[in-house]
Amino acid sequence: MAYTLGVPGSDDTWARPVTPPHRPCPACPGADWSSSAGPGSFLGPWLVRRLRGRSSGDGRSAKRPELALVQV
Image (cartoon, rainbow, N blue to C red; front, top):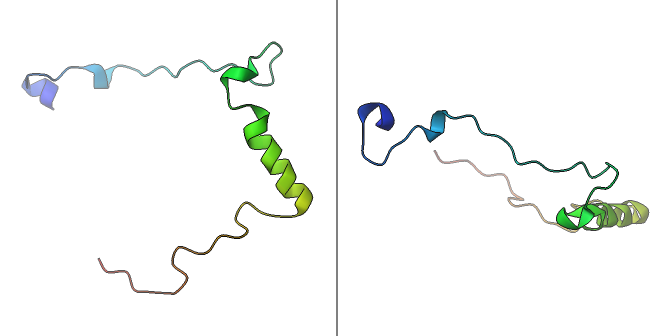
């Protein structure tokens, strides 16, 4: 609306298509694991939790453990 009305500082960048950044497939041969999170930051902790029979939510308390009315 600002661009249509000619407001100073507005442009048409909102109407241009957005191209997502290219990220190589981690499973592809020759993929560079150093540039991405890699398996150590996700797969390792996940495997440890599964082997120990734990969940990622174990040991956490509820944000609102008691029922309460929501004031609008």
